[in-house]
Structure formats: C-alpha cells, structure tokens
Image (tube, rainbow, N blue to C red):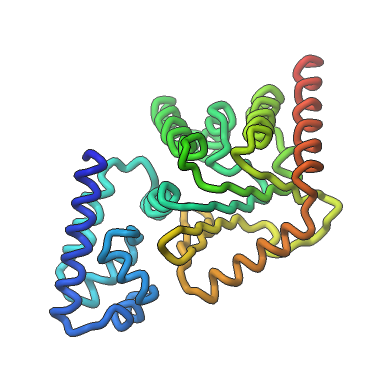
Amino acid sequence: MANGSRMAAWEHWGAELKYRRELAGLTQNELGRRVFVSGGYIGQFEQAIRRPQLDVATRIDEVLQTDGFFERAWRKLIDDKRYPDYFAAVAELERLAARICDCEPMIVPGLLQTAPYARAVMRAGDPFSEDEQIEEAVRNRLDRAAILKGATRPVYWALLHEAVLRVPVGGPNAMAEQLEHIAQLAREHKILVQILPFAAGPYPSMGKMMRLLEFDDAPPTAYTEGVRSGNLLDDPATVKGVREEYDLLRAIALSPEASLALMESAAEDFRRCETTT
C-alpha cells in the first residue's frame, strides 16, 4: 500500500472511530478511560495523527461493540508485517517525531545499528530462522534508520551504558565498525550520544530500555520494551516521570565529548583485537 493510500486509509479509520464513538454517546475522554488511553489520544486517532496499538484497537471494538471492525482494519493497514505487532505503532511514531531520546543498557539502539551488528543481534535472538528471514529483518531495521539522515531528521539523543561498548556483538570487526558508525554520526552532528560509565554505579531505571518521543503538534509519549513485548505509554504523569529519569541520567553520564572519546577508544581496542586474532 502506497504511503498516500495508507494515510487516507488511516483517516478513514479515524473518521469511523469518531462516528462509532458519537453513535455510542461517548466523549473522547469517556472512551479513552474505558480503553486505558487519554482522551487526547482518542482525538489524535480520529485525526489520523497517531496510530493505535493493536490492543487499543481491540479494546475499542469491545467498548463500542463493533464486532472486531477496528482490529480487522488495523491488521489490514499494518499489512507489510515488517515489525512485530507491539512495535508497529512505534515505527510509525518514529517518522513523525521531532525528538527521540533512547536509553539502552546493553545493546546499540535499533536506529543506530549497522548491518553486521543487527544481523548478530537477530541471529542470537532467533537461532533457528532461515538466513533469508534474518536478512529481511536487517533490511527493515536499516530502513528505519534512514530517518536520521534526511533534511527533516528528528533530534536524536542516545544514552548508552558503557556495557554497550564492551559486549562483543558479532565479533571484534563488527563491533569496531558499529562504534565507528555511531561516532561518525555524532561528529557529523546528526546525533548526540552520552555514555553512562561503569564508575557511575547504580542509576535510574537500571537495566531498562526506555524511549521518549516528542512531537511538534502532539503530546510526547514513552516506550519501554520487554521480552517480545512493548508498552507505549501516553499517560501525562507517566511520560513526565520518564522525562525526569532522562534528566537524571544525563546528569550522571559523561559529557558528549568524553563519551565520544570513550567510544572511539573502545573501537580502537576492537580493531587491535581483530588484528591479533
């Protein structure tokens, strides 16, 4: 489905949601409370500003008694199946975001991954997949990263624990290439990276992956991920808490300059390791 056609289809989805909601005599806030999102998000769904997650579409069907209409329509619109259901809405939001803040405790965030690194991560997570499936997943991940290279790219700020620099994913050469890639993006002023050093000790949300997405024309949202699951958080108080945790993490992280130096030093270590093996 072409992008223009997909957008028109989401606009129809939103218009139908508004029609069914009003037919049921519910305000946006009332429907939002029943499906566990804010009323503002219902408004954004109706205007096709944001896409709901699958579980929200399912709950809308239950509340409005629409016999699975919104779930079926959602599945048809997310028909390319490039991403797991729990991540599809996040991938859409990435393209709309004005600012993305990532915090990763153990691996390089998906938007920064190189092909060899992504391939090693995916193979480790699914050792029985066919090579063709792994390669398709790698291509999809690299396609997402294109948003960091365009003229309208979002402000991107990554907080990475030092462990991300030390865990040898894909071997020394793949790690060196990966760290050099991040360093190059930083030196080209396309991203900003800070490292949480081992010496910092315990830190807020230790061991948790977090993402904060901010928009020019909509409230921010947060995303956390677990084992084959994800949570898109829109409650204003929750998102505010996530933002405050980012502020604390930035305060204890190394400066961007020191972080870049540490990253390039780690890349050199992997290069030396490669030449001695």
